[in-house]
Image (cartoon, rainbow, N blue to C red; front, top):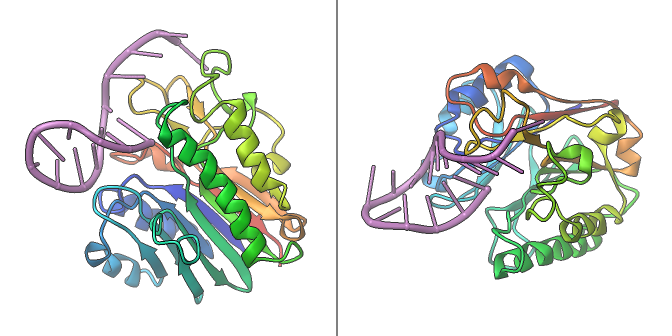
Length: 256
DNA sequence: ATGGTCGGCAACCGA
């Protein structure tokens, strides 16, 4: 099965791109982040027409997560279990017997702020979430915009960017704390070379052209599932579209 | 490679 993750930066603004990408690629699972739409306004019809099922939770203007699948999406839950906040940042479901967790991790604004502390705490809560809801031996895939570049090779300029909220030792350790539950970075397992990015900042002129990017979007698989991974790639094709997102999809393929 | 652009939504916030 193929599992993909894509920060769409508004599912309505990017509707032709998302629908076109699903039609062309037909993955079993696509997780998206930053849908930026309230549930009543979610563009369901466009996905009905191409034979994709969906589950989503959003809010006005910010955040919002969704899962699309050709197959049944079962056991859907939003948020950190019973906690009311962040229901539009984390969701899970079961698809084809695989547990799928889709997250949009808080960006963190700046180090030394409450928002950054919240981001660090968010990873700690996530570790607890995996411990509580899943067994290390099962097939779990955790994907999303994690807002962390794990290694120096995952940012375009590791010297000047060191200390950024998405590239510093504290967030890297926070991510590592979740990984230690039993996850494998599937892209890094399949590709050892740096310079492969999933995000290019809109605010930096020509960032895409000069490949001034970051690897912030990830597909993490439990060891049992990661053993079955056969490919993992970043799909930059969507960049050819009109009005592309600042992120591109990442796709992982697992043998049955 | 050292800078600013988007999306949502109606003034700026968040990335």
